[in-house]
Image (cartoon, rainbow, N blue to C red; front, side, top):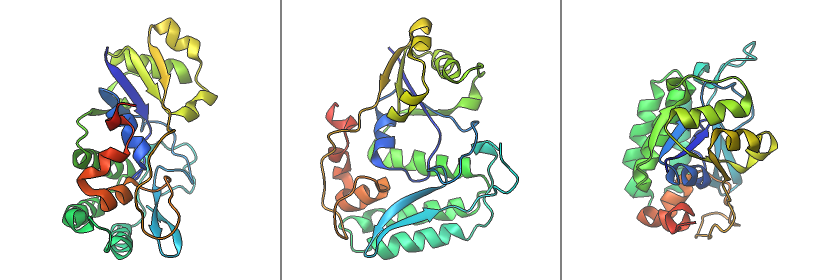
Amino acid sequence: MKKVAILQSDYIPWKGYFDIINKVDEFILYDDMQYTKRDWRNRNQIKTPNGMLWLTIPVETKGKYFQKINETRVTSHKWAHEHWRSISLNYSKAPHFSEYSDWLQDLYSQAEGMDMLSDINHLFLTEICRQLGIRTKITWSSDYTLADGKTERLAQLVLSAGGSYYLSGPAAKDYIVDQVFEDAGVQLEYMNYEGYPEYPQLYGDFTHNVSVLDLLFMEGKDAPKYMLSFSGQ
């Protein structure tokens, strides 16, 4: 049984995003969908002594009400240096920061020359997967023919990828019509994010809602021990 997940790309997302990737055989980036403002597509959070800090990639949105994620362009290339500086300043004392600093700085150097948000997200997603030991095949929804209908399109993508099982994020319960998957012969399951263990963090109270970089810097090669998909859940 081939397992498939389909999500819009996020910028340096939290560990739960990577757990979904790790639990399936093929992960499809749904980036020919509409870009949404003030979402996770172009931003995420890190911890600092002064609380949570948003790292946001500046993108063109004025007058582009219906642009797709893979059509969204950055407005300035300065963001890459600024994000790397914020990360290095706030995590330089993390136990495993030095193990990842050269790798991450190189990623930001590569991203600095990119114009498209989707390409930037893909770069970080694939490279972070490599660091976590995740070997799931990552493709694009634009690689496949898309059907009409919100749920019908997802079910058809799974079938087109040769899948018979779809792992969805829990928020999709608000719009997914389960019967469509049943009629298509695709088993539907929703990701459960409950049960994450805590790990030592810098700067105050623990929070799960932070970029996965936090986990890498704090736990290094032991990071998968604090993720659900590596523990069989």
